[in-house]
Length: 134
Image 1 (cartoon, one colour):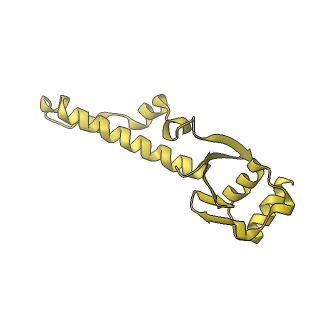
Image 2: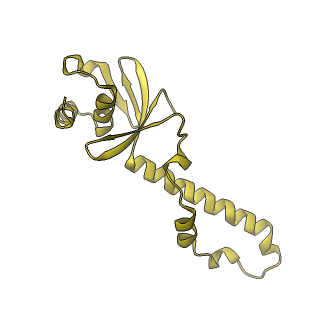
């Protein structure tokens, strides 16, 4: 099946591109497409009672932003505990966080376990697929 056919089938039945990517990844044949065999809840997709976790680029971007926020908060916490005891101002206000994180480069494999996920491109978009709940 072509990507366009799979995407059209998913749109017709109210499924997202995550389901479409999973159908392509699993190489499910057209004759085996039965809407009753599929369910989707955010990143959790069930096909024939088998659960998959599928993240798209938007999900990954959100996770990367959360990881950056967590790292920034941890750095601030450590600064508050050690350095700021001796300084009259909050030194973290003077850190260029954008430059720091551009140099630190948080990527997809920092937020998901690369041994559990497979990167799969479908219709010019990357998806990260994991068998089972994540």
